[in-house]
Length: 297
Image 1 (cartoon, rainbow, N blue to C red):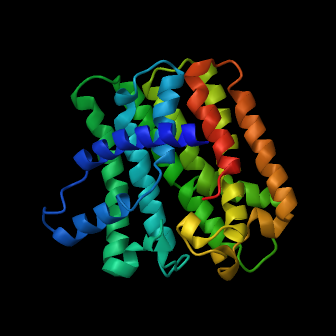
Image 2: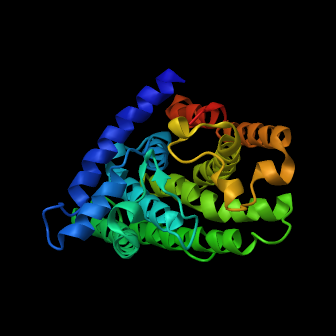
């Protein structure tokens, strides 16, 4: 696990460098919005999603730096979703990544606007790839379409709607999986596919990487649900038991702890199986899948 975390940290450093370049400086007017955007982006995340973008490019023998704009777009969208998820109208959380949430620091209005600004910036960063000509225009358009779908009513927003409207009724495992394929899985899917598409993946390999991403996303969410019950705020960076307090349906509440652990292991195995035809170029993806179900934070 330590070797994987070292490799993840190397990718995170590259991503952070690119994020610093694409975000407006905190000294630019209007100051408060740029300060709030940077506060949340650089609040200590592991950069797992954009690291998967870089790793997907590696898996199809493309250079990491070629897909950095897509990796940045993924992290900007992820951070936007966290800011909005934490708002009082949603989960009303006080901590994110071990720090006060954006609305606790800057107020609800600025937090809402900061999230929206990060959303817009993600599309600007991707569209800007056309300037240097390193990526074919049709690939840029395809990834823009992928990002739009991942954010929309079939992705993040649709999943969030299912999450907030299912609180006061019974939910079965099949519906819960549909919810999490949208709310959590869609961005993992986009992260992997964007790196592969920018990297020029052949259709067969893109399909296998997509299968990996879909199982990876579910394994990640199941482990997250387990950690909400078994983890500590010092490890996870957010209050333990927040799902139960917000009456959210999770794999633990719907299936029980042991079944949730079994489901996580099954999706991890399926993710690894999807990479069967890849060689060592996909080792980071393999280690990421194993890490996800064994992590404690």
